[in-house]
Length: 144
Image 1 (cartoon, rainbow, N blue to C red):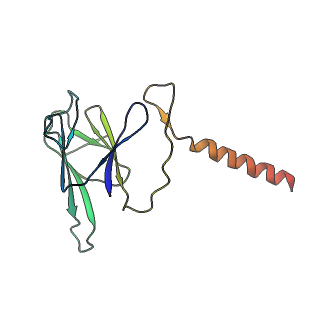
Image 2 (image 1 turned 180 degrees about the vertical axis):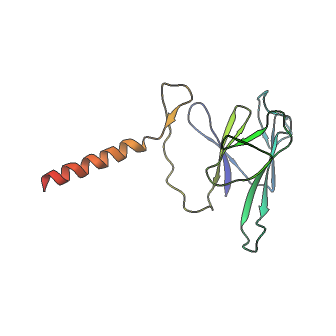
Image 3 (image 1 turned 135 degrees about the vertical axis):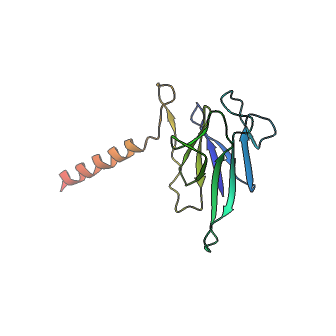
């Protein structure tokens, strides 16, 4: 299953499953994902589920900008049509989404996201664990 994980200020993400052939995103309430943001066009972008062009039978996810005023961005690049890959960051207006494709290779364990005192800056805490492991290795070498 694929989904869009909407990033929020408090660090918790809102999971929006891609459970239809075509998901519309925009400011108007008729969209599948309706965003209350003046920078978002009424019909801003579309995510479509498509069969891969080869004979592999793979499913691909494409995002298309619907000629919006402020464009659709994937990984900080303005796009008109883009094949989504696991981990891509989509920006529509001030809203950010991460594309998650659980079928795209092995997924890492979900990391806990922590908020810093700096607005809009978060961290996962994984570095601390790596430092602790390195410290354990040093102490075990000294004991030998």
